[in-house]
Image (cartoon, rainbow, N blue to C red; front, side):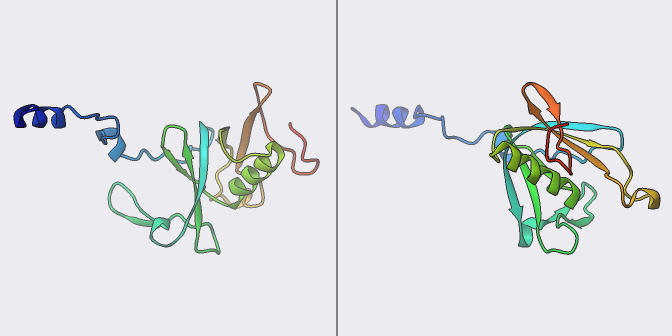
Length: 150
């Protein structure tokens, strides 16, 4: 093999592991507005600590992804690589209960619905989110008391 052929072979090398533009961008899933839902397939949940717990809005305003009263937060990574930051303990607790009931924490179909505005004083003690998963091809949530599917 001559040097020119060797160089051509190097250039035609397998590119299956090469990064593409889509690999460099992370899509963040915004929290649904009141009355709206997001649906996703969860690949895994990641605990955020230190710098990974800090974020910036599109206009550059800094914010924390930490849950209240602790220095860490949680993020769901979807099967497509998108990320959804858990907005509060209510959603985290409901997710945790669903994972225990299902017996798994990966490949879980989720629908998170924002049902009430938590900033309104009359809603402070009420559930602000409904968290559901697919059970036998039906969206179901867990009853807090009985731990049975609704």
